[in-house]
Image (cartoon, rainbow, N blue to C red; front, side):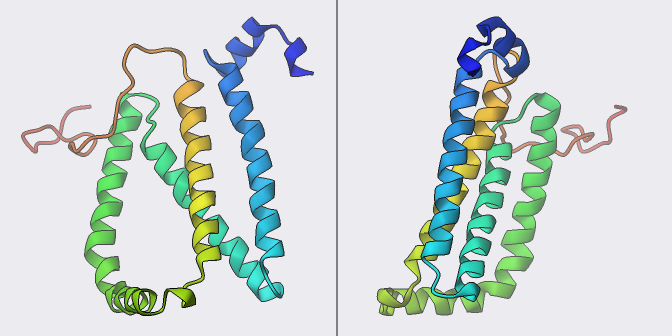
Length: 171
């Protein structure tokens, strides 16, 4: 049906690469339904199905955040995402890692001693939904914008509104 829509109309609505965006959306829907089906089928009872869905949702949301981080729309968006990325990175590496380090050390020890006890199904659901979320967000943000010569990339820089000298800028 959408093939009957003129290409110039699709380009105006979706940007310079409308077919990439449409096919990404179609395949994301198919893979999303497949992931939800696997979450239900691989759970033995309601609690396991709920946990499978929660793990898949956590993976998808993590992928969404990564997809946004790696595909800023413009320079201002890149500065904001860099600031948020550094803030979240500092929180994770400083506070959160210190709090969950004993738990992670125990889980790594159990996984290396008895790998059969690791629930690889949930690891796979989390990884697959994370990749799916990252790809969908990246493709939609990167390919739906009007063509630009050079898209900004996230890199270590300064917080928005702060100059390199450390003084607050007028903007």
